[in-house]
Image (spheres, one colour):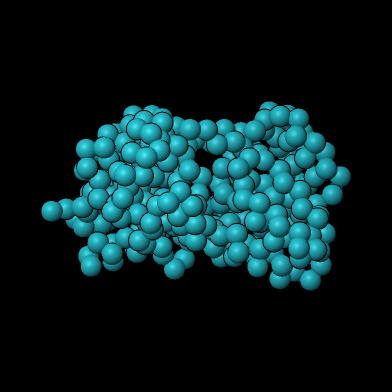
Length: 261
């Protein structure tokens, strides 16, 4: 019998990667979270500091960071000034999708961290000889480990939450929860800790904490990276598959190898 694999991430990101493997398994997709720009005075103050040249290094952790910054700067009629200020600093991004998003908006990227993990990013940044003030541009639920890892290496770290994550309880998510409750899902795939936490929150709201964990007992669970695996295990969920690299394509290929057995 064909396995049903539920990937808890944005369909527009994951569906194209799984298309060529449709003969291997049935894939369904839904993201338990959606992003919204964190458009407040904090971003205005960040722009003031950026224009004043306070930051030597900036880090964009995902494409949503770039899109949110562009949107909020444009609303303030400061987009060109922001891009010019970014060109004078060193902008590090995580992943080719983030790099492509920046380049599409005319924002210069200095380097791309090899993996979407805290350890990989911190190691990449710490290769620099000089330390200074660094701005972490990310969600309002970013990991404290990143701040701690950079601070302990001599950086003055400023956390800049440019977007917030909200629960997405749309039809696609409800469909996955329905199938899970009916015992029709064979494997769950979690891209990030935020996706894992949001999914578990929705599952617990539906059936309670004990029943939620009971539903997942014996379920095959895949996590894209050690941090996501640790978050799931912290909830008492066993993780059966983690790809060697925290990357979407690596995750899909690991899934296919696992399913083919």
